[in-house]
Length: 427
Image (cartoon, rainbow, N blue to C red; front, top):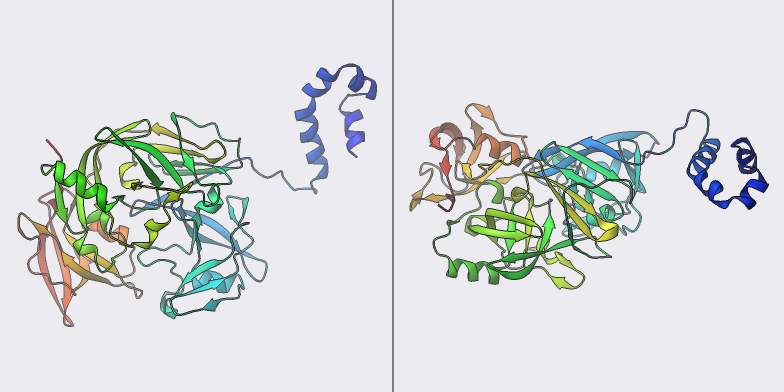
């Protein structure tokens, strides 16, 4: 069939021998013809690149993917693009639908990984993944991979590293393709890419000193090592700072988030970017998701999360250890104009108030106590929402008043709370 295609394409054996250049010039079209001859009737060639809409949920990138179920059919689920995590996670619901053998221990369950996922018709093999981790959750939360999100699977760095990837925050688009099919735009910078995990670090400057900061669009906020955070805080007591993980820093509702220290950095040079007023959290000791933020054996001094990169289209050229930054807009997102509640999303869809952040030396919502439940905002029930959706409901223009319905010891009450401007920008 291939030789027949050569003759039909107008290349004779003599032409091949006497004019190699002419033969080579026809090769691209020739291979395309040969590929089409191998496809079944009605079957199209796999796409070179796909672009799909993305949803920003708590600054995290969420897209739709297809899973192949045990009965051979497919089902679309939400997936979290998590380039700062090398491990594959699944919900128990997804694992069951795909017929995976789930084994549970004391802290979590595991299962063999699915063979592949699909993104807009493009097959993404999950080769190299040894196991899928499945959080232990009650039956009522079996379809939840992570509390406060609606995703059932993540796409980790160990899979993304095999592709060209573009995360387009301004236009809410996600692009993925085999290497070499994306024309990256913007300013290019060399990066450090861990060949095993796919984790990425970008050479950076803070206060004219060199550091490596991981690139983690799976994190809603940026982090600095405790040593670096304390050093900068001591040198710049005038930089805005606070205690309590409000807004984007309210990552998961971990028990110690009310004690987290936040600071607004005056300036960070991240590769070719000059970023100002970057909010960073003092990395709590032993926080597990940061322990893996190492690339090439080099420990990172912190990570830059998506909150600092919302104005950019970020191109990840893993094959050439490069990152591209293409600015799409210039807008300061008022992420810390919020009501100062620190929330924990529960497996049953409720939201527990872990703490109320202080403001000007006083509790920002004095009527609410730690342990109360947030029931509604302006009369809109929050149960079953994502953490990102609830935090959007609590945000707005500073001074704007919201009506909060809370529950204490089984009794509901309503309080008026104002949106406050936490971490005021450096003059």
